Length: 193
Image (cartoon, helix red, strand yellow):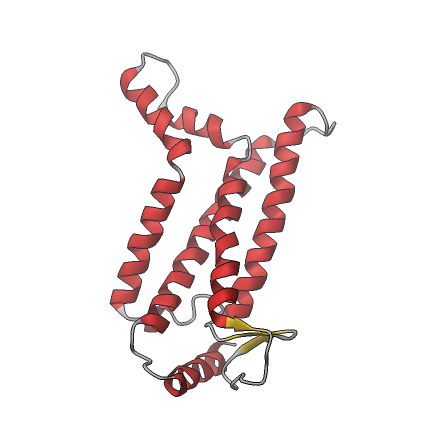
């Protein structure tokens, strides 16, 4: 299965490191969402609950921005470090998207999914924000837009986690030379595309 096919075969140290990195990235990147509602719930006498404050913050489409900001760097990380426009050195284990060759597990999938997530986030964020300004005259189901933003954000966190695990696997020293890495990627892509 694309994206998660090799997670069960990954080293625990790679998974543990990815859990920590993903959790810290998520907590610190979402401080603008949860910090003031937390302070407000603890120190201000208000009838609004913590959950209602967070919902008021993210119901305007903010999670779409966060989703794009999580997967956007994945495009750079994969293409800058593990992709090439030069297919002369491409091994049978690499994946391709046109002339772009990825020497990263599921590199093509992550690249395409990141672009789709960014495009969907931009469209949905625009719809959510412009609907409140009156630019879009349609009646929107804000609750469904919110639920979709949570789903796309959770999926973006999952993609970040997977890329981090696979990056850790490649950088772990388990594959010390180019031939071992090439053999690993060939075997990986033959099993999982």
